Length: 314
Image (cartoon, rainbow, N blue to C red; front, side):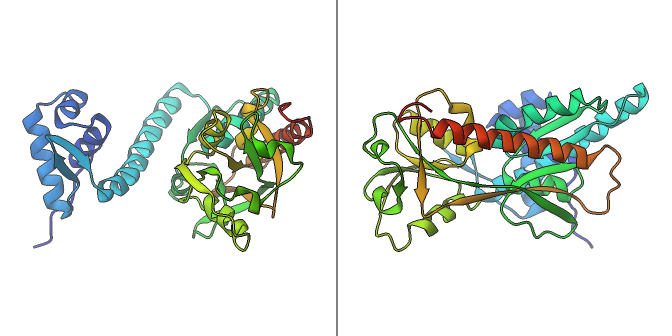
């Protein structure tokens, strides 16, 4: 007899627990009793054969397995929401909404200008922007839940096509008054012993920095790892340490006192546009991609000009 699989109600209960942090909170979200949620959770763990939560001092703590399952579950519910929204637009006769999945840094630094230019060009189709980590952006595009995505690094996933967006060098980001701000260029060896804010290891950013440090003898003291690169820059500006970041990550901090210095050997961050293979372009993907490229170049040029100012001028 085939094993019974998970049903929608199990995923719904699991998602509610992850969002609320407790069975009681999940019940409030779903409008059902706490015992009903507990039964659904027990069924979910039994049917999946997975331990999803640990009970610690009366609290439910998600396991690593639960975190992985939650990421996939969120994609399912995002797809359901998109289908519902599409049905509503079809009933109203409005244009299809274009879904853009982007890294948070690009959403903040590049997309506002690109979207404004897109709208000014007379495009009627509304855009829906989803900010996600690189793996989730890739997942949305691979599942055909996003029409266009922006990620970092190489893309080798069946069913997903890609094109370069931009390759940008990393700047050494220093707080005002830092001893290294007096140098025109910061070199890898200069980071020895310095409190350092590490970048996302999941997206491979920190691996690029560590490759640049090889052979220099430098051993920075990792103060914190921040997966969101704009967050790493914010911490550097606040004096928590120094970090390496590209123009997109530092752009929103221009005028707030941060110091930018070229870094050697160069650390280059690559961004790519991705889209589902075999899907007809019915909204002007190439035009939107071009607006994003132009906006990205403008941000890069603005940051490079600010970095050329005297120390503290950025």
